[in-house]
Amino acid sequence: MTKQTHAFQAEVKQILHLVTHSLYSNKEIFLRELVSNASDACDKLRFEALDNAALFEDTPNLEVRVSFDEAARTVTISDNGIGMSEEEAISHLGTIAKSGTREFMAKLEGDQKKDANLIGQFGVGFYSGFIVADRITVETRRAGVAADAAVRWTSEGTGDYEVETITKAGRGTDVVLHLREGEEEFLKTWRLKSVISKYSDHISLPILMRKEEWDPEKSTQVLKDEWEPVNKASALWSRSKSEVTQEQYDEFYKQISYDTEAPLAHTHNRVEGRSEYTQLLYIPKKAPFDLWNRDKRGGVKLYVKRVFIMDDAEALMPVYLRFVKGVIDSADLPLNVSRELLQESRDVKAIREGSTKRVLSMLETLADSEDAAERAKYADFWKDFGSVLKEGIGEDHANQERLAKLLRFASTHADEGVSLVDYLKRAKDDQEAIYYITADSLSAAKNSPQLEIFRKKGIEVLLLVDRVDEWMLSHLYEFEGKALQSVAKGSIDLGKLQDEDEKKKAEADAETFKPLLDRLKETLKARAKDVRVSTRLVDSPACIVVEEGDMSGHLARLLKQAGQAAPSSLPTLEINAEHALVKKLSSSEAHFDDLANVIFDQAVLAEGGHLEDPAAYVRRVNAMLLG
Image (cartoon, rainbow, N blue to C red; front, side):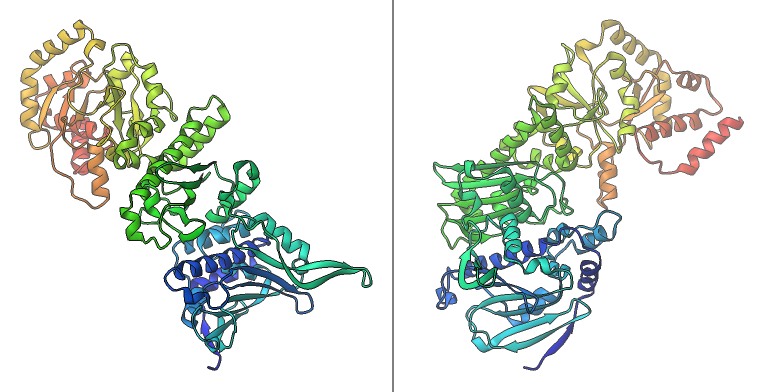
């Protein structure tokens, strides 16, 4: 066919502009990305060939070749992998279907240092070639199609690209970078070798370059026709731990995760027994941009006997550990394993359970370390990933107790980092429950009237302000034999922590105030289920609580914000018999109804709720001020 010109997708244009004009740090990253793409193409061929061996044609040995031409000022990355059809070349190179592109551009357009490392993080690695090249030519033929059905894709990284049909004898893809002025450093064997060694040494395919020898006559290095491997070509996870340096572990993590920082922790183990597999798993230092997308597939790659099977084997890791990156290489699974088989396999279940426990062990090691620096690492991890880890309380009953020990909260003792174990160590001798309150914010929780009796008694209360906390608490009922009890639900019974005099006074107040309580119930019958004398208030006139089993006001608000219907139930109003405003209520005839509603409205506001009729509240307050 003749050449056809296509316009880039709008987002690609923006990315290309940023790549060519903004990225200037760590340019060498382009080679990592293109070698990684080439390796992936070979992995995909190996996988497809499990069902169709003819795709190997007459070259079953898969490899990646990196070469350069000093005179033509080109660097070429070639592979004999799966290749692309014309349709795939247009789709993969001219458009971006992946999510996260906008976030990528926002990061590059921000004030922070422009960093080429970012480019792989959002699935746009191919375009990194334009950091060093002003023109890229891609020649590709899909495995299994005729030699004359190959495709040439060419672009200068501006508004469009050209596609034409060519003849290509071998399957696979050649990416030819025509280097810009000033990028001559990449026309040296030693420079390309050093980049490959740094970023791609772990790749299990051989990465070949032409041999270079010293020519005494020409007094220079001369390229030979012989090709030699420049990487170890053994999967990093298959090596002994003693053979792998921390730097190699970190670089491998960056390669598979597209992260710019080293991981927080890693574990590398060979597991033997009913199932035999190797795991190399990492916990990132920072949360990825799509952490809250529960539909996003996990970050664990599955290999079977070092043959790549799939990139996002979510069956190998529970959803609440979706931030974990790494590789699992099984010796037991069949090579033609499918996603459907993964869901049902007993071996996969064993791998999933073993890997989950290994990740939790990593986190426990950090959280329980005697080294303050390690505990600080866990504190940083919790800030980014704690809310996701809480999902496991409801999803992973088998590990619920281990997860509960990893939870961290704010409390009336400290604004962060309080574990349930620490809480129980500080609990009163006769304390029968772990007390908590849920609220929209830390300040709202801290200042809630429901905490007053607990402060007076010196009883610590957990302050739960994450959106996921209410859901988590519906699955976590107790910890080490102590029930978790909301301070805003039911009538508070502090048991042995409340002395006899206090109990007798509460009973006496309830009797003395019975006429007032009856009148308040009548006045507020449309707004309150019941009105009673409080045992939890010290300084505030009133508070609202819900009965055990009813939905908390905080959860009801969260459901409404999410556009869901919350069951309608009236709260209970508790009044402080010692408060001056309540005593005034007893003697107020003219403004009784107004004052009763104002006290109720104030209790709603103090609890973090919203008034259904703010204007009526203002009107009542003004009437009493003027009266």
